[in-house]
Length: 244
Image 1 (spheres, rainbow, N blue to C red):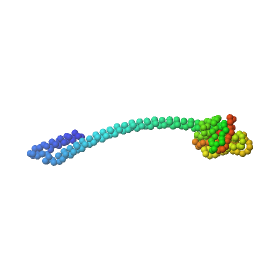
Image 2 (spheres, helix red, strand yellow; image 1 turned 135 degrees about the vertical axis):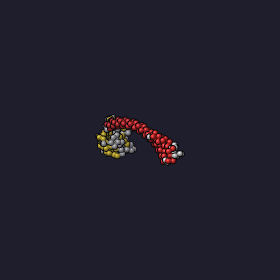
Image 3 (cartoon, one colour; image 1 turned 180 degrees about the vertical axis):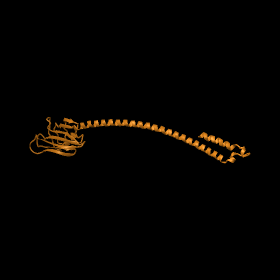
């Protein structure tokens, strides 16, 4: 099309510039046909517009090519991100399975709790209420009982059974009072402070619901005493019945 414009421009220019004898001496086509030069101007303007349109088209094609390259790059990145996401999902799934296994093992371990301990020595009197430290460990599955403090600490939320035995002073006026404690609360007690007899034992027990971290222990009241020796008359025992 551009070649046709050039050809039209060339012919029209010749027609404007040349003289024609049959029109008379000195008479030009421009004089006889004034629209020809205007047509040439229009053609030249159209040619400029065509050149500009062609350049715009080339720019648009280049921009489109650049955009296609960017889209190709983005598509490749998306595939890479998708692959990474799938790999992370697999890793997270594997970690979840490992965590579940560890949780199951931990639950199975902490759900098995039982202990039994004996005193073995006489204690008291003390100026204040004192937790009894049963030093001889007979059983301590789950390590809930601490002989250094005499305190059992619940590892899991559940229902527990506790029992203790008290042996009063071996001679003289009875003077023994003991309580089973949950944190700072007295649950049950045994009492022997009257009468002329000795060599008496007393036992009490309780079933209680504990939260993880709750403490249970046996407390000797202030100014009271217990007798014990190598035959272990005073004991403290407990175990988890079931979790909640």
